[in-house]
Image (cartoon, rainbow, N blue to C red):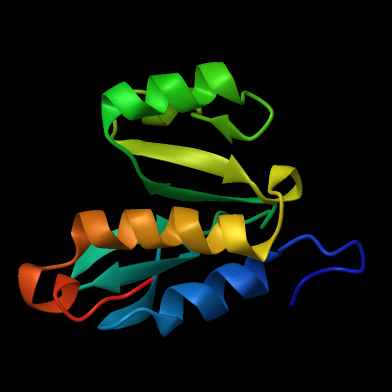
Length: 118
């Protein structure tokens, strides 16, 4: 649920992720992960202050350079196609939904993409 300052929180990540077609939640590595057609598109690490989404490497570098207060990658994920997003840096629920939808679209099969209207 959005916090008192109107910022999205981990409950909003869960609610929005589960609203996308074909999405299911699974616990992996001790944290919630959200998948479509078996492919993970978002994780919520233990401290719940950020979340990780799919992101092409070339876009990831641009995001981090443009908004380092919002986007980052921990050293152990440097070689992955994932980026972390700080919840407190988001402009609101609309931005959260856009980021999650983009990651979902990268993982979803064509049959679900055809039915999705963000």
